[in-house]
Length: 270
Image 1 (tube, rainbow, N blue to C red):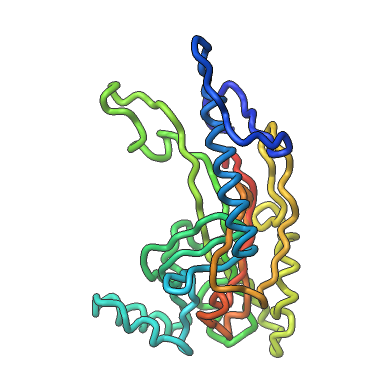
Image 2 (cartoon, rainbow, N blue to C red):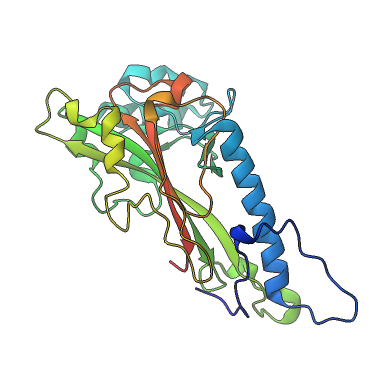
């Protein structure tokens, strides 16, 4: 775990609803961190219970997969040069990830602007197909990989406290997402990448696991169950674990979650 912490005291099995400060007592970082974890656990569990494992708001549903079949979605982009560039890249086999919000097992995921699959930070991804590899019209499964990581001043200098001479104070937890592609050039009928293909995602290994890697002092997260053919337009996310949404790239539909899948992994020092 990255950071200088006394201990991690949050345990959902204890069913604590809050941390109450007492006068004349020593205050530790563990108390404030547990209060934050209690509230976050409540909010993400509430979201998951209300909207289901994954969904997005009707008017701002993000992460739509935009290909040649639905390229008219780009008409709303005001910057003409940017719009033409995206349209040209789609013609070359790339695809666009639409802006908006989405919830994966309770975790809020946000994309501020339309970007190409190949423009994502960290691209290319291990085990994920390149745009060039998708031009043959092969079967492909596009999924949204979501996880949470810890950030210190080493990764983001902005969190240093300038008033204290640049000293580091608190660390941060950051939600990270990546849209990835699984493709099978031998599956002409696209049978391997239908709704049942999502069941394979939790078994992809450390970079694609559906089971959270619980940090010290916490219970392992439950196995994430994904139903890509029953995506509701409402919301989805994951509780400090890695989540994924997926669906066939050949059939992107805004009304059902944009043909993507979601999974999550637990908060860790990575």
